[in-house]
Image 1 (tube, rainbow, N blue to C red):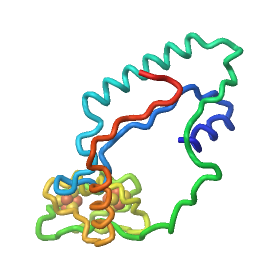
Image 2: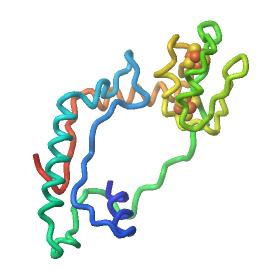
Image 3: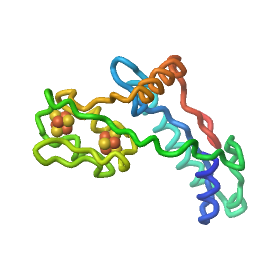
Image 4: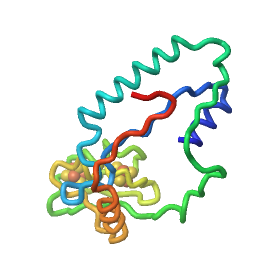
Length: 171
Ligand code: SF4
Ligand code: SF4
């Protein structure tokens, strides 16, 4: 969020508020939940209140406030992006796949093509799991052991409910 704020400022914006909201993790499943069901009703109500307060803050801004610096926690220089792409993707269980094409239609990077069966262009996969979560027959799954390890680790770390964090505006 610090990087996002700095980028917005570089582009001439004046950030006045920020929020870290909770959403179900893409690796989450029913068996390995990671913030499943989030955002929930309480999150949405808080987001709406946050939005209303931002609107009021903007309406009350004067020209003297134009360069107010919003404090966002974070590290600078930013951390590096890690070890690079994992080059793995979900696989298709041909016994249960009906070749309906849903996975291809929800894939945001067009990594999936359907031509009698499902083919995945692995380097294009960003591991968003949209194909896994939207497959109507459960045929699209992860078999990669590292992915399962990461999901289990996240499940362990994120077991306790976490609340959203807001900056620049309190509720
Ligand atoms: S969504 Fe599932 S059933 Fe449909 S084509 Fe993709 S893998 Fe097969
Ligand atoms: S995980 Fe996401 S990016 Fe990868 S194949 Fe499925 S829908 Fe496409």
